[in-house]
Image (cartoon, rainbow, N blue to C red):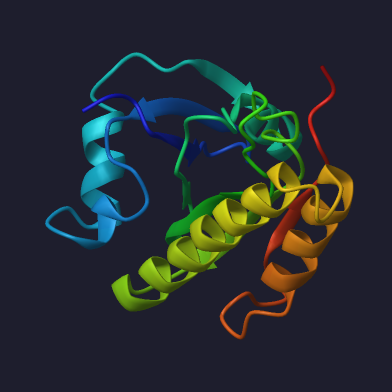
Length: 165
């Protein structure tokens, strides 16, 4: 299994060290709980040390990371699903790395539901773009609106703009 999650561990000074983990967001709710994901990842050398929260978000690989695990000194491990709000199309995924939602999840059913809704809507909207029924920009905007309206996507969700290329 490849590297599919970013693990950010808060240091005593409030800064973060980042690691890569082979466990994605949904796997962490299966046989490997989030604290075990953090323990496995921190056995490796960190990708970076001394990052602030913005630096952690810049370290996130939006194309391949399925989850962000944040191990806070005074709060335990929080798991965020990385929901790409891009729309894959047959023409080469022109809107594939659009905005991103980092959705906090605490249980397997919610994680699977959010991931399924995002994946399904992305695919259907990509087909609509390919069929000429809607522009890619409109499809991405609709996907963001639909995800924001999902009952399990709370006010604690982090909404990231598209990355600057």
